[in-house]
Image (cartoon, rainbow, N blue to C red; front, side, top):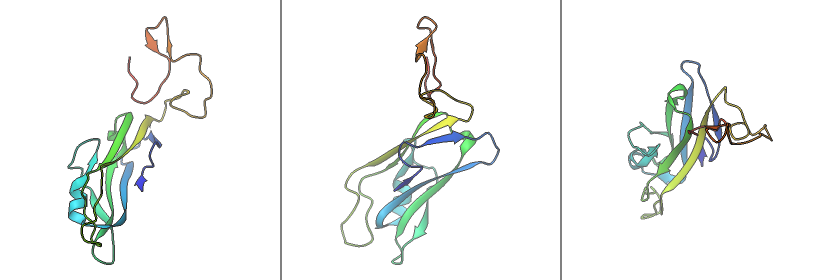
Length: 142
């Protein structure tokens, strides 16, 4: 499991100190140090993922990093776990492939059919004689 959920839209907060916990939960306990070093946020390592749930055998069942929500750019963000994170039970069991999940951060004031799923209609995605975007989808640029 992963949090924020795959495909979730997170409203960006302008409040200082607003935090977003990014969490990956494994279906079985894994080696904590290996798991912490094998999780990427937005394609890069070094985001200080820490084991946030220890199992009874000393393994790690969940890693989490807390990020400043106001520091995240509008757009799509990813969480990835490398192949080969070893389980603490079952000998050679390990993650068989790369896991990847994405979520979107959208500015709180953004609205429109793509940024706000409650809006069901908008006249066009490109307007003004094809010179600008008419929607406010997170990460969209002309």
